[in-house]
Image (tube, one colour):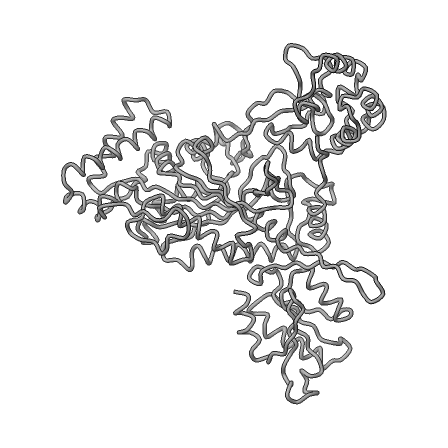
Length: 617
């Protein structure tokens, strides 16, 4: 059994984030609150830049996407229709001793992070017998008392070790590391076999049970069952319930999308990995509504097929859901590449049929290789999810149509006209396929067979009249996860050795200029020379309306460069005596220093704005 290792890289990143003002623990002076994080001055700018780039890319630069900003608290009936009230849960265990809650699917990952587990793992690695009673007894009476006081081995070591010895004599050994620690957590093995230890204290965990992740509250002056509400666990449902309003007021036609950036809340049992999994977070979601394949085929004669990999190109009227899904996966990868995350840092997980939600046709997760990402059996780091792009069929609009009683379908004149020109055999084929799809949706949603057949027949008849419920492709990204990915990707240690052999390590945050919190550092060579300071302030005021700049005149120029490197500032402008005309040919020029390679060159002040805008937008 290999010894679990601490993640030193993440510790360094967390330390830098606190020291430089990227991220702070929420409510820190009161001991903090687990799963909540505040963004400091640099973090707030970084986050704002990312959201603005997403918004511009997904809405303003496209003709086929409109924006929305919805409330955090909505009608609880929405969450009933979406399935969150009944099924939005994780399997949870609780410790019988310390009462803490543990997600069953995270139990072993949490175990590997605990100091008592690492301490026992070291004993195993050092010894020849992983059930050595002598070593375990010594540990139980020393380190174990403080590290895992409720572990069976610590509470009653003689009892646990006695039956362990019996197993050894019979030739029984733990099958793997997980079972090894279950041995040590089981005081007396009975009919139920081994128990799982609590990662926090070693106590016995209960059997898992569902735990709903939504934060529950009440609206109005009285707390009662009639005014229960929930903090939204995702931003998508607001888009679905406002679909018809946006469609009508934005003068869009299917295919088109609705984008939204906003807060969401999930009562995670075990928030973990810094800001990767927290209880309050922000999402950037697009719901892109498309015609069902049957409608596309009726209008255009066939549904386009494209190569299974690569970008399919500019959207075409005869695209079906598979091409649209591939298009949005590639569009999102392009976005990440445009802000500094190369394909080498990303991974992809195509969900299997067993992993997919019952209504989904496909889902591709874009992954990032975080410092805490685990290796697979071949030793490769696959990564953890940044964004999911799901083909959700027409499930969401259909659910809200069914629960609200309000129509969520659209009328398509092009489809109505095309349908009448189709041969009878083609009409029957498309009718049957659409009927089967709608019946399948309703059956899986719990509608009785007779009612499902009746409604599916009405829906298929509506297709012939140019009516259908749009399908949707959903690219859904976590802002906070993306910020953490950008920070991890930018974090760079630079070690230099001087002429005397002294080694010094500095830290550089190599953010892409488009997302960097500070775009430009303005540095007068000397702060005690009024003419330099005056000119530096003029340069600052010239650029300030166009980008975030930082004026710094404290300390040597080298120390100021280092401070800006840690903040991730891609460009620094030094105003020196040549700027003032000491060399006439360099009058009104500044030295621009590039963060990533340290190179410097002179630029005219009159050219600065356009040059820097071309690099940072």
